[in-house]
Length: 248
Image 1: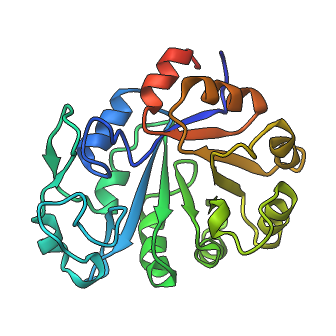
Image 2: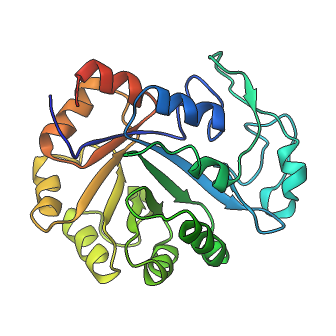
């Protein structure tokens, strides 16, 4: 298989083998030659942006700290661990700047924004500082956040994260397509379901709107989605599946 456009994206970095959203798992993803890494970000008490999925460190850390109510110093003291035995057992929660500095040439970082508009000005400043073009992609279920950042950063890629139960409109390709056009979004990042078939994908492709799929861990399904023409998949096994399918 050969494609210069299809992206294998590590879900929360290589989270099966190292603590999710940490430099250990992010660097492991780059070592495994994935095309992109996806991380989640939140805002601390002192308005620093950190990589973490949940509102607190209860699930992944050795102490229970609420991200928005805790200083960066205290958050950095928590040990973030992987419950599955892997190549790395624990690490610290990274600042977004630390993550961006790991991006190799030609690779991309997908940033899933887990909070609303309070993060916009801080995120904008960081992305400008690190010259976001061609290496940073913004995704979120909060369309208003993506719109605000797109207004500030004209060349940023923005995709709406979609799961059927979240949608306040009909979950069909045409409704999603129209929503993207109305909100100046580059496309969608949709949870994989049986709805995602060739006809569904074609509606986006025929309108030059990108479509990514999450979280896909089955090799046969990844190949099927690749053949449908999606732009990429987010997977817990991105490096493994990319190597197995031999997609270059």
